[in-house]
Image (cartoon, rainbow, N blue to C red; front, side, top):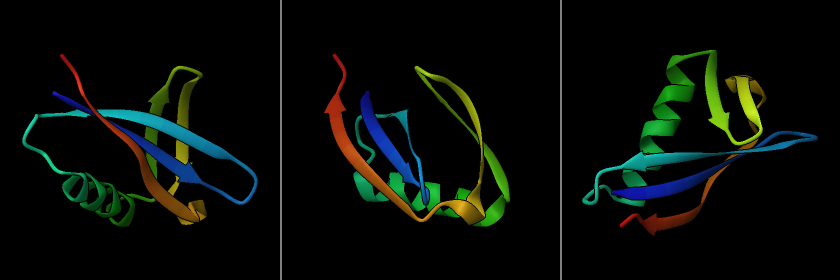
Length: 72
C-alpha cells in the first residue's frame, strides 16, 4: 500500500489529508482523482488527525501531494 499526503490550500488555511491506495497507483492518478472529485462535488469531506472537515471545492486555491510513502 502507498500513503499520499494531500495538501489543500485556501486563502487563510491549509488542510492536509492522508490517502491510502494500492502499491501500483501513481501520484498523477491520485491527483486526477482529487481534481475529478472537486469538479463533481461542490462540497466533500476530508478526514485527518485534527478532525473532519467539509470543504467547499470552490474555495480551494491549490492542491498538492506533498508526500508519498510505501506502507509496510
